[in-house]
Length: 232
Ligand code: SAM
Image (cartoon, rainbow, N blue to C red; front, side, top):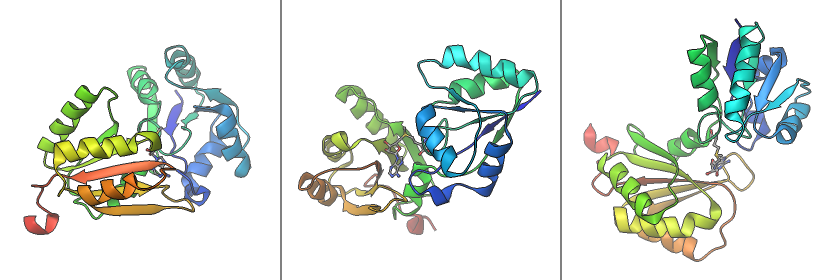
């Protein structure tokens, strides 16, 4: 029986790949990835040549049995995504679940992921947090999702696209109130990395008055959420 390694890759800065990730990528028989052209560029940068197999949500039910068959024949594989940690708002859950059911050994590697990179520098409580991935699209469902998350009293963290950020900050104002503390992380690990922190009212105002470009993680702490200091 082979091993399926879950290998995080950089979220921007290529120096963030780990030595262990490189060693695993060099040692496996093949690599399952989202976009083969995108991953080929990353692997070329590190001088790694391996067979690449595309694996994404649209072909996962066909691809997973194929990958698991190879693993059960003793081959080793790595699962990567376009950036960050596979299975975190990226394909992989289906394969991992099927591999576990098939008795395959799974080895996860720690590494880059936008959620934790953003949270630790947000200045918001980190002891408890709720990660929502990408928010639901329908406004009604989205408000319900946010309200439920707010009830947990923990810092709420989610991924957001640039074209929806303004609208989402408006919704957050309705659900969390203008005095809640928010942090928006942009372009983490890249040249234009930036954190915008403040009350929801202040941060919404800032983004209402500028062009919105890049990749974003949004974090909000409910108004009544005690800081870690308060809890001591
Ligand atoms: N698997 C990835 C991870 O572990 O973070 C997430 C992949 S998800 C498809 C992509 C989203 O993650 C982006 O739309 C953005 O919200 C967030 N993201 C990824 N890289 C980022 C970065 N460098 N800065 C800020 N947000 C980022």
